[in-house]
Amino acid sequence: MKMKPLAPECGVEVEGVQLAEARGETLESIKQAIWEHGVAVFRDQELGPEAQIDFARAWGGIDINAYFPLDDRWPEIAVVRKRADQQTNIGGAWHTDHSYDQVPAMGSILAARVLPPTGGDTLFSHMGAAYDALSDDLKARIEDLSAFHTADHVYQEGGIYAQTDQGADLRGHEVRTGATHPVVIRHPRTGRRLLYVNPSFTIHFTGQTGAQSLPLMQELWAEAMKPAHQCRVVWQPGTVTIWDNRTTWHNALNDYQGHARELHRITLTGEPLAA
Ligand SMILES: O=C(O)CCC(=O)C(=O)O
Ligand SMILES: [Fe+2]
Image (cartoon, rainbow, N blue to C red; front, side, top):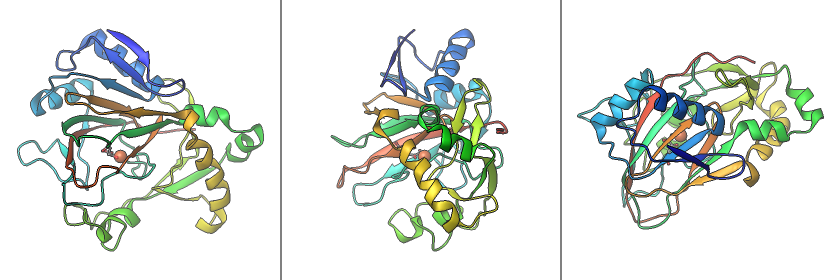
């Protein structure tokens, strides 16, 4: 197994391994790489739905996402789909999956199934690198802050997706979420400090209104969105990407209108977060 960086501050490409067979020490090195680099790309994988589920079970627990359509045959698999006739994609803005849960999912295993002829890349940004790049003054201002996260405005009836052509495909309009997390968390495995607020699900700092929170929130988001902290996953047939939601944000580019794109996602269970 060989690893090479995808970009200076984020991501790694792992060569010479089939995830369907990666267990034991190989799996441990893969986990460690993802916790550190935030995201790992694996090419030419033979990882059908059953093998993807087996690999996820070998990693740890599987979370079922409340909103994405599930595959009829394999309810562990959430289908990230944009049909050729749809305009809106899933995850097409910077976000961290599941930050609105009390114990947010660790990450996801996303396997390419149908790809557009060009485009449809996924961007990732490293929140350890973003935190490190903040000024000492900003670091001091956020040191003891926590923030409230929810997905209600995104997925509920009348929410963001309901107003798009993805609305009819998504589930869980009645689900209500809300969780408060430190603004700076420590990675549960590496101990690295990570910025943990994101523009899709973080609503306000604890003890402040959304309007009061916005200027500082926007300063943090601006750092987190800097290209220096990012890497880009260009999908190919057989590509599987695994990411850590604590270490990274991601953003699925929607630049392939008129073409279908479909990936199979398994969400991996996380652990409690702390400052
Ligand atoms: O389609 C993608 O590349 C990622 C979509 C997304 O945000 C997710 O699966 O969590
Ligand atoms: Fe996502």
